[in-house]
Length: 135
Image (spheres, rainbow, N blue to C red):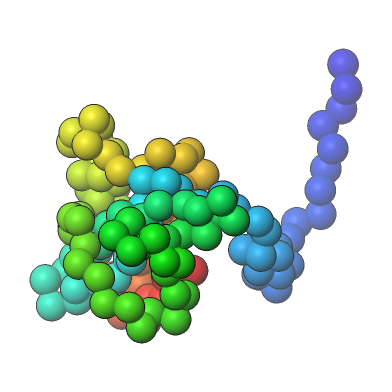
């Protein structure tokens, strides 16, 4: 039986560097759309606006109405297809993934995992009063 490998205990700087490196990896975009996650502090809510998109042959997210690639700088104003809300990351995940699974717009597991991580970060910011910026 092989002995488990003991890794050195990481420090905060190591973990931040690892997260930064992992954030720069290639990801395939979800054909089901994308989300803008934000806080409504006055109501104590974590919110996620869902927007539809198509993915072109170059792997770029495009506006389903025009076929044009969506800009990353946030200059295009679009109407969300739905807004999900929750007081906690778990409540928001249940609203998105479990309330009506047939209607869930997320089609990729990596996208679901990313959203879960973002919802936890947003909940922590909501509780601490710190600023939340979506990764």
